[in-house]
Every structure is written in C-alpha cells, then in structure tokens.
Image 1 (cartoon, rainbow, N blue to C red):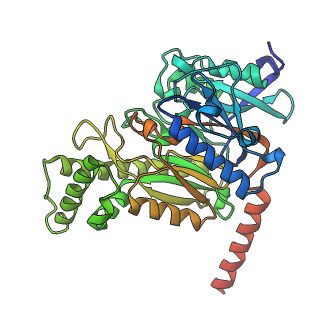
Image 2: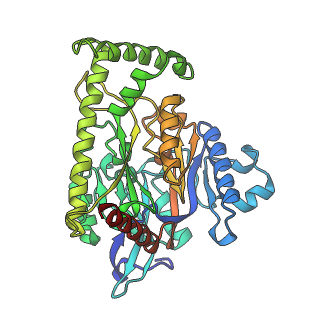
Image 3: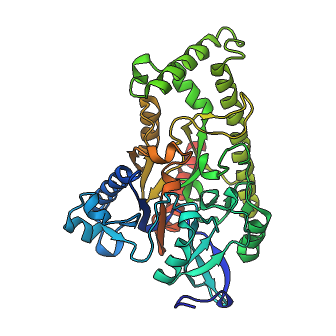
Length: 425
C-alpha cells in the first residue's frame, strides 16, 4: 500500500461538491481533443489572472497525454506552462472520457472528523481504466473501487453528483445495485437520491441536472436543470437570422421545428407524424420528466435535512434532446450541445457553446445575475460522441477551501429575512 490511508483506517466516503475550490482540472490531450484542450487552457489561465489567484490557490491544467509533448504541441509558452500546466508523468491515454472513470472525492479517518483526499474508481475499464489507481499512487489518495464488474454507464462519474452543504448524493437510477449498495455502505445510506436517467442513451444525471454554489441562494447553491420547454419557446420566437450560426443540418431542421411550433399556436395537431412534430412532442415529455424529478429531489433534500419549509434556488437552462424512438423518451441525448453538462471552477462556469445566440444569451444573463462568469467553449469532440465538457474533464478540489462559506449563506439569508419582515409590516 502507498502512503495514503488504507480502507481499514477509513469509515466513510464523501463526494466533493463544486463548492470546494478547484486545484487541478484533468483532461486528455489527443489529436481529436487538441483544440478543446487549448481553449480550456486559455480559460484556466484567464481565471487565474482575472481572479489574481495566489500560488496556493492557483488552478492548474493537468494533461493526460496520448503521446509526445502536449505543451509544445499546444503552443503553450514555457512561462505559462510552469504556472498553469502539468503533464501526468505516469499515465498516457487517448480515451477522452476522464469524468467517467472516477470521482475524485474524500475519505474520513475512523474515529475522527478529518477527511483526506480519495478516489472512487468506477471500474469503467477501457483506455482510462488504469488512471484511478495510477492517481491514487501519484497523489496519495485513498482508493475506493466499485465492486460492480459490468462496466455499466450508470456507475460512471458523470452519474454521481453531490449537493453542496447538504451532502446528498444524486445518482441516476441507471446505477447498478452493487455500486449503490457499496456507496450506501460507505456513508450514503439514506442520503442518496436516484432520479430517472433511463430515458437517456448514456444515462447520466449530468445530462440534465447540476449544482452551482451560490451565496445568495437558500442552502448555498442553485439547482441548474435542463428545460426543453424553455428551449422550444426560444426556438419558436427566434428570428431566422439567429439560426445562421448553426451548421446547415441543424439550421435546416430547427427552422422547420420553428415553423411547426408557430403553426401549433393555432392548430395543436400541426406537424403530427412528422420528424419535427415528434421532436417537439418528445421534448415536451422530457420537460415533464425533468420537472417531476427535480421536484422529488427537493422533497428528498427537505426530508434528509429535516427542513420541510426549505426553499431552493432553481435555474432553468435551454436544452433540447433527440432520440431514436419518435416521440417516446428513450435512448435520448442532447441535440445541440447540452449546456447543463458543464464544469464549475470557483464562480466560473465552463459551458458548451451551442452556437445558437438565443440559448447562449439567456444562459449568460441568468448567471451574470447570480455573480457567475460564463465561458463558452466549443466541445465538438465530446458532443458528437454524446458527451459534453463535464464528461471530458475532472477536477481535483481542495477539501479545506470553500468558494461559498456557511457564514456567507447565513448572512444573506438573515438580511433577506429582515427585508421580508419589513415588507410584511
């Protein structure tokens, strides 16, 4: 065993939320991902400089190379590389799905309240199959291993999300029974919510739900959810000129969808039996699924936290899905890049660029109002393979540094309560 604690000295696993300050952003550099990795580097450099982060708080890009010297291949200067980049010295791969092979998490030492860095190996296998144990040795991480051997999508890191502060694990119901039992045994019994992800082709919760630390929100975070109905409304109202930035296939199809949506204002049966009509009906059904599951999640959190009157901040982002069974929600994935499938770095959000202005403008406006800064990144190599930015990155976070502190949340809620009292008087 390496220097990290063995499991005999550990009594629970704890997943690390996006409210913990980021230290390293992991990504695989290959021929197909090179442009994305360069864009990611530029954003990370910008965040470090704009936030004037100290050396102790600096965010680094951790590159897993597929071969050669990625720093020179990406044209990154030696000075910038020294500050903002590191290349994994022990592992190489061209497998781009670095989120899915693991969760970088924490482990509690027995008989204490001390948490140490850990990794949960999802046992995904394939090209990145050896990365979790390699990082455990390289970074002295406690090593948890999924007992399920089916290499099922539902056990992957993209299907395991945790709420800030409340420590509620949200794992889509595509998770295997073995993996679920293992995580319950290690600390999440009664704290795991399993929303419906079976209608998705990949079956990951990060395809429609995410949690963003937010100082002014009740509980200290916002629930970000995909909203297909909002997306369809934006498509229906968008001028034809705003479809020009889409590729020709998407532009042609969505203009036809727009026409049917507008026909349906006067004729609800317009488009019935066509690809456009099925697409619209499918997305209305998915909107209902998402709304129902988010509602159930809120009730679950209220129960776990013993706070029946708990309020939540909720933000809807436009996203449309396509499937292979007409209007029936099954085997679905994002049609345009799925914007909820994002990466959170402090108060910065790395969001897939949809190249559809009505979507991007609304996303940026809603989060600017919350104090977040949005960076749109072209994630084509992931989107075309039914994934997005979150699927292609992973983040090592500081267990002892929070972006939003409990004191900040309490202060804001106290001021809001005072305003409510004054207003009622």
